[in-house]
Image (tube, rainbow, N blue to C red):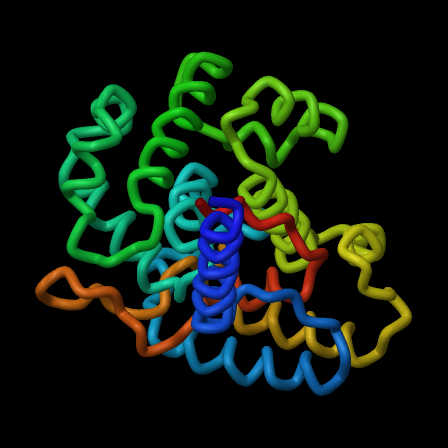
Length: 262
């Protein structure tokens, strides 16, 4: 009996090692802001931004239009995957529910059925986590919004995240980095502290040139897009570009703890 148990354990270990080796690389793996990485990121940033349509009306400086709840949905479903998956999930949710309150009271298995053909790993776990996050945001804010985070100080943000324990570290980290990059890209005030917050030396000339180019490219948009191009017919994820403009920038920030896979 002991020998059989040992053999089974070795087999399981071999299977787990095989699965790990076969796992695709994480497209959101953090990048050091070296001149070479900044140059490559800017080139990819320009290519994907060229596929997107800016808002028809001029945007007000310093007023990002990205809905932060959309950002939560995006990273919750696209974590470890190209951004096209997050984009398609968000499109289906927007078209399938009258409003976010209806989405809030929908069971996780129903959302799983809506998204089942996309082949997203751990889909039910993701749906359940999103349902819990949305429920806790609603209970805390009496509404499904996170816009207050833009005006909140770091301490107030941390207190909020403590009040919503359903929000896992990789989502909290994603939001924190997103808000910092928004400040760098759109604030009319000095962004030196914001750059320091994400570990980019304000005296780094290559980084300063990079952000100057990014600001110019984003000026017609006024926000950091999470999309990678047009929605595709047939409900297929758009995989023409691996990462959205927002996620390309966030790779340059502090690495965030990925959620645990079962």
